[in-house]
Image (cartoon, rainbow, N blue to C red):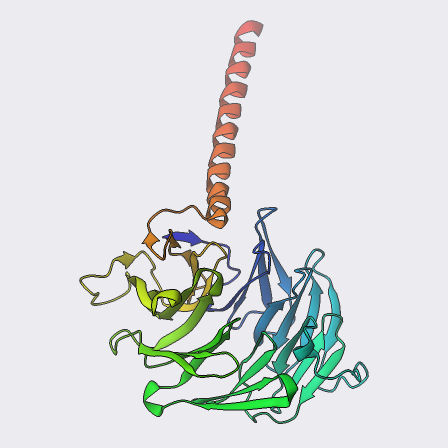
Amino acid sequence: VHTLTWSPSPTPVHTLTWSPSGSHLASLQTSSSLVTIFDLDSRKTRSIEAHSKDLSFVKFGSSGESFAVGTGKGVVSIYDLKTGTKKATVTPNSNSNKSNKRASLFTGQDCFCWQLPSGDVMCCDWEGLILQVWDKVTRTRENVVTGEGWLAVKTSDKSISAFGPNNSTVELNFPTEHGKLISFVLDRSGLTAAFSKGFIVRLALGTFEEIFTGKFLTNREAPLVDLAVLEEKNLMAAVSKDTVKVVCLAEGAREVLSVNTCSRSSMSADAPALDVKDCISAAEFAASGSLLVGTAEGNLYLVGQPGGAGNWVEGWKDSLMETLDSFPTSLTFLFFLFLISLTIIGELHNANHHFLK
């Protein structure tokens, strides 16, 4: 396990988001007003002050040149990724920048959506122009997910409303025995939902017919805290505070990784342990297939990388880790250069002192 110690504060990581190219990683933490961004190309980390300690989401535009940060009050700020400067701010009452354009989400336009405390769902472009509003989808502020021309909103602990092309609306209701709806993801072929009691449900996008339903975490391992899907490699991860499980979607949800953290009081005999000292709070796949997990103390860990044909192998070849691992080495090298310099200067001083005598 590799530890990434660049988080700005020792509070739980609740959001991890990659830019489309995989060159930048954004992180949000509980009770922190900072958006932490790691630039893989320049090997630099920076924190952008968002002026709110109730940050709810961060999203990148498809070009990777801008990102948006939302708050619990429904206010969204759009930033330029290169400079870190704010480009626009959209508030729940931003009628002045409202467009007459409609159905932007379903025409392939680059935009993003979020939900207001009132229950309305807003959609705007990356210049801050409001394109569409869904009135009173639900009266409780919950997560909004978009993808492949569909928008999905959590409307209760066991239901999701999906809005699609041609004004189509689908109401999805899940069994109470699955537990509370924790997280869900839209990709090109389906919607995947995760529940607190360890159940995962995957539905076909559009028809929303069931592809599979299974209990991926036992009662001892639950409750589930996050879900991550990497469609390009057919991988899905279900994580609880001390368990990570990864399955291959292309092989009937075959399990390819099951590990426990060192914080477990009783670990499964057949599950290897991860050197993670605190509770897992969020997870996201890197483009390579490695799984990045955030913890309650603000740490980030890279826990593995798949090999070929869905196998999970040891070895840390991910470019992110190669970059991050270079920092301690570089610092050590500079420190030794400093010591050598002091030694040389001391010898020259002694030689000069002896010569003068």
